[in-house]
Length: 294
Image 1 (tube, rainbow, N blue to C red):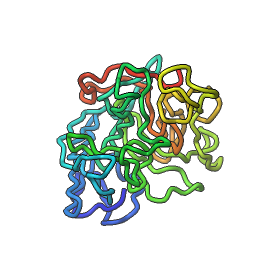
Image 2: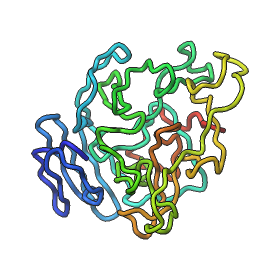
Image 3: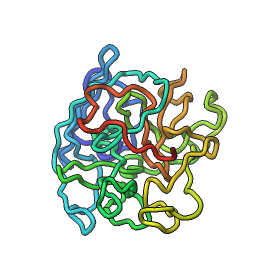
């Protein structure tokens, strides 16, 4: 976490000074953020088996200019209130999700929200969903792979560089947040042997890849990553499962936990939940959605 200022931690948490790089162990318990420069406000309270989160969704790092030619919206404070399980529970199968369901929330209170409300010929029934991080680059994302909804909600579609800082290929990723089912979210780098923290560090690659050939309908043309449906999941192609996650030990969970991984290639932010989503995180109208790679 970077750019935290004027922070008053709750009991049992250590909140860092301004512009520091935060060890993720400092955000596994209760903590608060109050940043007078960015307006960020966040309170996390861990009690029993619940992680309670209250946040205004304003990022505590520099953003791009909004509005911009690809995104006409202005960042404004939100009112998020979530009760997530402290420890997620794996479901029998992965569950995809649809707009307007977000995926998770970062340690600074900004949502991970990978789906874009854009379709081929602007028709949700077309069967072709435009990717926010695609070759056309038309959706006005900033350097944090984020932009703004019409509601004013700033949200991440991919790797939040202002939050992660410079990730080191020689160190395990910091903890970046929690998914709606309570499982933790990391980024890119993890232990080579999932059960051995002394096994070195590997780039935890996605098991999705571009389909070969050309699209049989809709927009036509070659599969180039413009649409979600351009990708397929190939088990074993990378190191992560269909939900872009795996079970492994981490610095915060030395006994191991299932966790999600943000990647620099599709799906960037996971498109499936591995566990049961907390009721407070379910967004009305955001049921089961497109299943990339199916």
